[in-house]
Image (cartoon, rainbow, N blue to C red; front, side, top):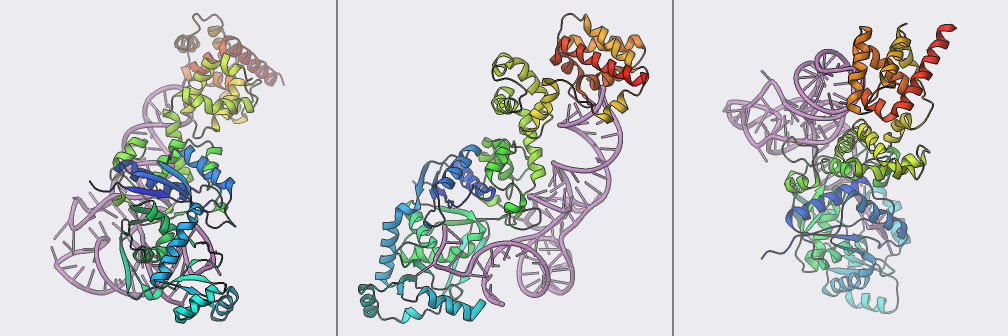
Length: 480
RNA sequence: GCCCCGUUCGUCUAGUGGCCUAGGACAUAGCCCUCUCAAGGCUAAAACACGGGUUCGAUUCCCGUACGGGGUACCA
């Protein structure tokens, strides 16, 4: 039986869950689900200076929100310290690493002097073993550097194909700091070996780290995993997506009223596609269609406009019962409904949601649109008034509509349109000639859901009141 | 500077030598549907970075150039 596939997502807790990170996690997750593998979450907190608990929390919350559940972890890289040190000591003992007694000041001076030409000069490679041991025993501060061998390091990248680095272009990098803590490359390799990771799928900003890490695997006598490097996500200006582009954290999108399933779908399509023309795809479909081979090499610009479109599609198909808990707090916060009305008027609110969700692109647009139906008085849109009420017959048409609604029985959505059509017919005009002025009277706008639903939701009393107010306004305008 | 990676409509992308008069999606414009809006349908405009090869034939393969991105830390 082949070894099970094991992948990991390893964010550093130095901020928020960036959409780029989320996308990396997503591809790992998809791959694990597709192959029946295991998805491990590991927090890379070896840099104590920059790591903090709060951002770990934020990252975990972000992943949970977007639906990226992990099978093992979260593990903390810092907990592996003894193993990291043991691995470094082992390499030291076996000669694949050596102590470096150069001080940070010395190195900084050389760097300053040589500017861009700088590369560690391997000075301490020449320190004899006995001397190195003696100086260390005497307590002289030192780091441990990896002794980069001659030759070429290459791998068959799952995304990029054959990739190779001349070892000569790799400096003898530090693996253990003066304080005995590991540098990223050592910690990652040590942990990935320990966690039996079979596929390392990460951002392609890690490509230059890969040969170093392969060298480490080899020095530690471990099996080198498969590597796949994902293209970056860019902002609209083609630069790496960052804060100045606006929303870049997963949490930002939650705040913006984006549905997690929409972000999930959208991110999956950034740098990957199913090979056919499907775009709106549920998780199961994505898992079904996913393959590492179809991941692109080219970095992608994050198109917030298309995300909104996709969100609209998800909003449309989301059952109102599921949408309700998301919208209800916003309605309450806007003061549009009282807390208890969320329960007492639930059916009515669900009906309203049903109408609005197909017209909204984000959850947050819904309360804005709902205001018209929940708060008096109506705010008239001047353009709508000017266009739809300009006909002198408007008052009569509103009057006819009013009459039709006043005695309507039963008060159902289905009964309303025929009644209004009959009113229009009795005036000898098309339905639109009644519906449009009425729409403005009821909603203040020339755009709304179907007039039958609008009338129904407002209720007889509410509808008549708004019509009366419109007629008063018209009368006042005519008089002056 | 050096080392890597990349380059198809404005954006996301299909395309693995002839199926390409380069397909789809978002956005844009028009039309249809229609009580308006949204959704939907139809249509339009819109791309193979450039230069050399290889080949009967290159978007597709190779090499350059240009441009973009990443790395070059006792950060991850």
